[in-house]
Image (tube, chains in turn purple, red):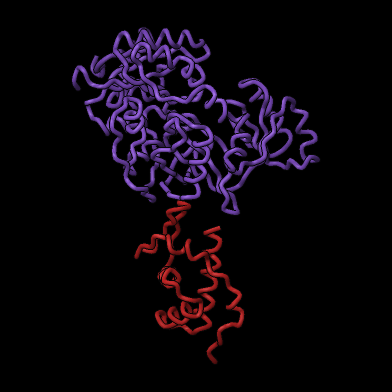
Length: 357
Length: 94
């Protein structure tokens, strides 16, 4: 690595098995594209975030204050890190950070930290409580969804032709399948307590889940789309195995959504192909997905494309779509010397190689 | 035993969508992959022959005749196998 090499800070290093953040996969994509010609700064919220301890991908790591601490605390911490080791590009990978970070873009840019993110309005337009509006505008099918403020809804749900199983969702996070009224009320209470009101109730669509990842250029174009069908899922419905696919119908839907949003930055569009073969929009995530390493595998390294876009560099070549590449996750243990763990806990950072210290 | 005659119901058998059949990646091992849906399945020797014949644009009668000749089975048995396999294909491509 050279002293003046590009430095990219990546969040979402919580590569936990049941619901992994995308940070480690993004770092892996960039490492494979640039080798030691890039410095990767891993940012995490917990000293036990597994990605922080994969030193082949993270040259240094720092802990951040949780988003709940507010924008100014996050900015102060990011600038402290930037002071210690200059960051050229900040690439956030967690949904919960984005509302704060999009507001900090001008402050970060002023200090030389680039980003490639949507605006606050774009972010709000794809939020779960406004997704139906967006789907209508883009002409995309979506399961009927209601915003409710009281668990009483479930008493009359079946009379209103809302048949179980239903999906109960938080406005920001969490989605649970309720097979009866008791489960629905329990899900409502748990989600309302954690994520607030309203809670969303959605008709459950049975079908195959297919996701698309890409980058919006901010002017309405979708770049470098990569599609994947889930072949195995975790207990929380996250992909454990998947296979690259190529479906023009899915691509067309994604292009319409990105055009309606004029989206800027990474995006993941989650769809279910129902029993009639129609795609139904489930969710739009404002970040790369945890399966983004598949993009490197099919010759469309999306994190590297984002790097080029953010830094006004020529984009890397994109291979034609390559359906049929399978990914399968696995769990393994990373061994962490006590000294390294201690320093991360006490100092909130690990600089350079600490593997033997 | 007299050879059974092909059934008269064959004309009602709907073939899978030609565009779907065309895009399937067929391997000699019998592994079949649909690059659009991401689904895969395995077919035995006769299933693979049926798929190749359908991909080639053959009619049901032609598929039955070719299969009968290739595997040396009676027309009625060939027809039964083809119809059963096509029914499985339709479920796989739903």
